[in-house]
Image (cartoon, rainbow, N blue to C red; front, side, top):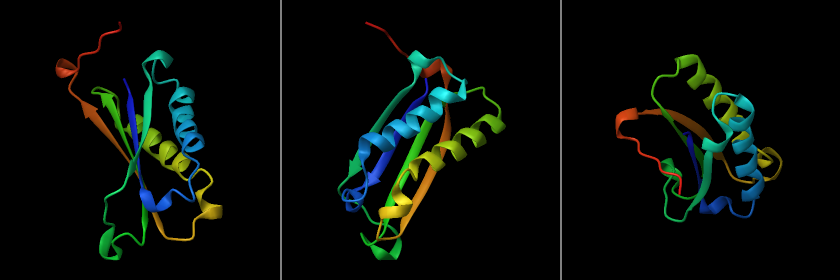
Length: 119
């Protein structure tokens, strides 16, 4: 734990350097010292089919879902969400020519139903 999933709408492909953005968000988790480094898992998913508000596909969306095992205080959730959301803007401010919504949601996972095996 944790699992970081970043979703980006396809209309942002010309503006986003995906490996750099993924690495920037992953670094936030590494530098937080909240998790064991070997437990941090991050991935980025392009969304080809999407709608954003009334604009349809005229706006972009960069959203992160951060799944954590339950038990951390709200302050940790808030700090991680703010730091990840900041990292998601990596390089976007200077190059994007359409409006972009950036968000992050930190969720608790039930420890009793999470299973992980190392092979």
